[in-house]
Image 1 (tube, rainbow, N blue to C red):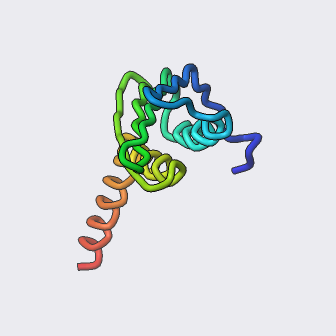
Image 2: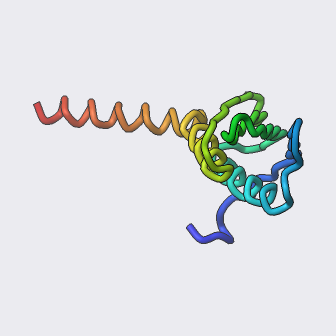
Length: 118
């Protein structure tokens, strides 16, 4: 599907929290760009809250998503900031209801196919 035909989902509010140090604008832009991927799975993203901490040399990123009346929360720790962001976005993508229903549908299709073959 071309980008012009892809549905545009609005992200209403992104909040960044960091108790010990402030995130740079480039880091915030990276997080926003990665979280924009979540728009594929939801009709409306009401709020995104990103919490960042540097604990003993480990970057800990926690994301709370409020979308379509459901809330999701995941956190990840890694040696690099971007690796932690990538990992937490991947967790959010796999835990979204659309992804889970696709997996269930694929499993049901495989089961029906195997029943037809036998």
